[in-house]
Structures are given as structure tokens and as C-alpha cells.
Length: 156
Length: 257
Image (cartoon, rainbow over all chains, first blue to last red):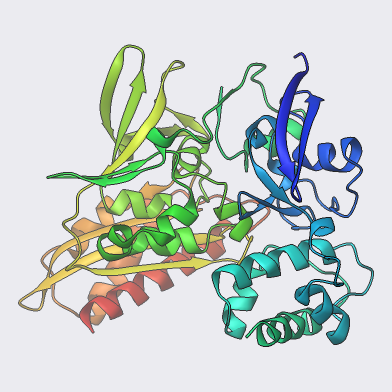
């Protein structure tokens, strides 16, 4: 397989990269663009550490062959904080202690942004479902779920 | 080999276990991503994701078993990428949506440069991850007849966790009572044998029968005689048989309630 050019937008900036078509979007983000906030946990779509938004939809970037990102709008953890500071979801995770070792945190935050985009005032059940694909081995989830509810409240 | 959402093939590819050396991406083809109602059928494009299935009002109203199976497949991220056609071709015996397709008696539209043919879904799987798809064919769409809205419908997945966990067992059932007797019944089970299976002999025992305690035990025996349960890392054959009987009983109690 030979390399080809793939163009997409990441966090508002246009990029054209020379890649093998079956490279993982995760690797292109981390190694080609230096966006190492997106983590690799399992590499099998089970843990959600590599969660990013692709055209507004939550996806596991370890399972996206980069050719399928041609023309896409990608959002990663690095794109959330603005000039005025952290994103409200990041603020809520900070306030509620929703992170320990931090490997799952970018994915948890991206899944939360996706959830609140679709369901601005989620029930606890909806929070559990929305983050069901994101595994955390430290927190026991309670503080993460509290952070999601806190973020939902702060966005009202 | 075609690749759509990659939720299965990217895992195999990453592990070096994907036999195919040439891949063609079907992701993003609008022709495969629509859900259309015609006079006799609802045609679900094979590239529809689980999220598409969950969000479609016709699926929710006419095929609630499919909507529910879509909702407990993988996680939200997997539902945004995994496709119904991919789930069928991959043919995991534990796939969540396949028992629902069996009880709705889905037909598959198989397309190649030679044209399109229809195949009852129940005839598609021939063995563990083996199927009747020709090398040059793809699944174009899944055709479902919207005639089950008045049926009692039941499905239950038994697994270790709601999201992500692969089923130890999944039963889908449709039934209709007329004058205290079972007028029509369809049952299919996933994660039990090497392919999803329709429980035709159990259905035969149930047809035309009124509620009785004897019926429950006869049906459980028929089910146990009909299936060849697997032992694997997720569960044992013995557990599967016992729980399948429990699910069947729960279905019947709901049907007659």
C-alpha cells in the first residue's frame, strides 16, 4: 500500500497529511499532528480512551482508518479550552475530582461533550449510557458522573 | 474486502488477523445509509449505523426489537460507526441485532455487478462466521415487512455489563394471542450456537396452545433439544441452556399477561 494525501480539519485548523490509507486516525493525530491528548488504551474499541468527535459524532479513533476521515471535521481534547480558559466540562471534572491517573480523562471529557450536545440535561441513567464505552480503572466512576451532571447544570 | 465502520475489521487488521489485502471503503455512501418505506417493505441500507436505527421513527414503531438491540450494541461510539450490514456479514453468533432480524423474517438484498438477489436472512449463515455471500457481493439492504406492530415483542440480553459486554445469551421473541391460544410465535436466540438460530421446533410446540404450566416445561424441553449450545470464554453450555429456558419462560409469561 502506498501513501496518499488525506485532508481534514482538526480543532478548526485544516490539515493535509501524507499517510497510508489504513493508518489509524489515532496514530495520525498523535504522531503526525502531535496531538497526544488523545490516548490509546485497548486499541480495540472497548475502552474509549481514544474518543474524538468526527463530524460531531463520538468515535473511537483507534478504529477509524484515516482514509475515512477525508473531508471530516475532527474535534479532540486539545480543541476544547478557549482563550477564556477551560471548557465547562473540563471545569466540572476539575471541580468534582473526576480524574485520577488521567489516561481515560480526555475520552471521558469528549464523551461528555458529545452527550451534552445531544442531551443537555441528562438523567443519571443517560450519563451512564453516554459514558458506557469509556472505562476508568481509578475513580469508580462516581466523581466522573458527578462531573457530567455538574457540567450539565453549569450549561443551563 | 469491503470495510464500513471498521468496528470489527480494524481490530482484526490491527492484530494482523485480517486475511484480505485489498480493502474498499463503503463508509459514507449515501445509497447504503437510508431507511425507506415502500409498499411492502421497509428497506434498511446495510450501511446504516446502530445510531441510525435508534433514531429512526419507523424502526422504533414497527421493529422495536431491532431498536432495542441497537441500543445495547457496544457503546455510543461503536453505535456511531458499526453498521447493520457489517454485523450480519461478520456473523458473530453473539451479535445483538441478529435474533431480532430472524424473528422479523428479514430478507437481504445482495448486490454485485451481476445484479441484485434476495435471500431470506435465516438462510444466510452457514456456520461459524461462514455465509452465503458470494465473493463479489455486498449486502445492499435489509428488507423488513412492517406487519408485526401488533405483536407482543420481547428481547433480553444476558451479559456481564450493559455497555460493551458481549452477550452470554440473547433471546428475541414475537407472539400473538387469539382466543387464549398462541396464534403466531417466532423465537430466535443469539450467543447459543455457532450461528444465531431460529427456534422452529419450540415454536411448533407453542403454536395453538393455551397457557398452562405443562406448556412451559414442554417448551423448555423443546428448546433444550433443539439447540447445540457452545462452551466458550463467556459462558458454559449448561448455563446457556438453563438461562435460555428462563428467558423463554419470561417471554411466555409476558405473552399471556
